[in-house]
Image (cartoon, rainbow, N blue to C red; front, side, top):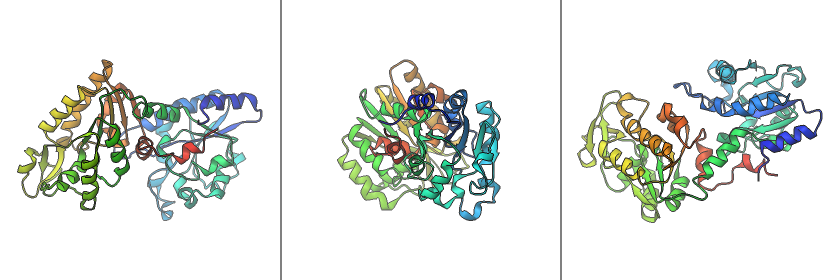
Length: 389
């Protein structure tokens, strides 16, 4: 059992001299689309901490800089300050200096954002010295970044050894929401797993294939499964080294596995594609979205489903030519959710972006990607273990 935000409130009430709280956020906002889901996710926790009379220091990573990128503004968390301020409705002071070059007591603002954690080599190595230094910037710690809780990093795991540590409200909501598809499942249970690579989702595919009633494999990932079965996917993205894994999942799945039967394919992702059944895909073409027949089949399955887990884009939705499946399927999920006939749990940045304005209409939307998948697959996440009582 993790230490929850209610435990944090009791701790503050019963301990004097607690003035500043470090909040681990995920402000790794996408730069190609306007998606502030991760900022809205932390809003409740941050404002609640401030309402208790504490100052807040926000810490986060941003993109994947190399050590030589420290002076490159492209990788600075300063890029997020205006967006964070707007969502929180509070002024955010940005501290661009290294945490080793400033006196923690010199920070006087109510709400401070420190520079990109990945500018420090010790972050991803779970370095204890870095964790100790980070801990100097607060009297208590909250992890409100479920999306990074599958990583044993200094700001996620090691820091909890140096400060009283608790879960934030968003992290709690993530656990509760995802548990809807891991415990007491209302059946039939359908999972839609998409994205580009089988290799990044092997464990969750294996786990879901054992627990779901129906597993729908979409996105470029489906190309690999179909190619493993002997279909010629022409110029489509496939992972030949995952053929054995794909065939193993198909053979040993307890779920009924659904693969696309047709695709929108084109020689150029910037040019509209035509609808082809698998056997008729022209030479030189790549599959960028599922076709109308596959879309209709998924909708038919959804109308008989009670619980839905969806992770991974179905098509190349970023391109208007190939977002048809998302546009057709998402409103059906919304309709079924609103009518009370479906529990819909959606996870992952790409998936969230693909459903656009419909985020608020789902039962639960997780901002996490890797952590979402590992939690569903049954892994113990280092960031959650560190918060256990």
